[in-house]
Length: 156
Image (cartoon, rainbow, N blue to C red; front, side, top):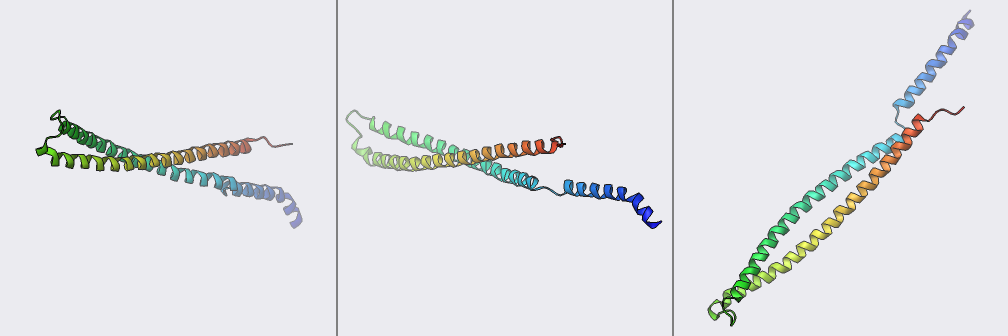
């Protein structure tokens, strides 16, 4: 009698075991799911890096524009002093002129260095953005592959 009960219930037990296995498989992330999650996490970090980089460049560019306005103002001051008299800068203004001229020359050197630094910053930001875009494309391809695999009809 006992064997009869087991034979009657074993299909139900097998179905329960298969359902449990399937449920565990669906609940437990696959290797591909973990890879996609890692890609997403990396993508978030890269996006934050790109945004931070761009914000820093915007601030640096604004400072450089302000420096350029000061530089233009200094240049205009030097030119004004040179144009006071057709014969050149008057003797009584010459020391003031030299100070303005030296200040302008020093500012030009500093401005050039800051502009070069800004150019390097743009290159770094561009590189980060390219990495972000390449990773976005990889994530998209991985998700499409994953979707195709999950929705593929079973082979007979």
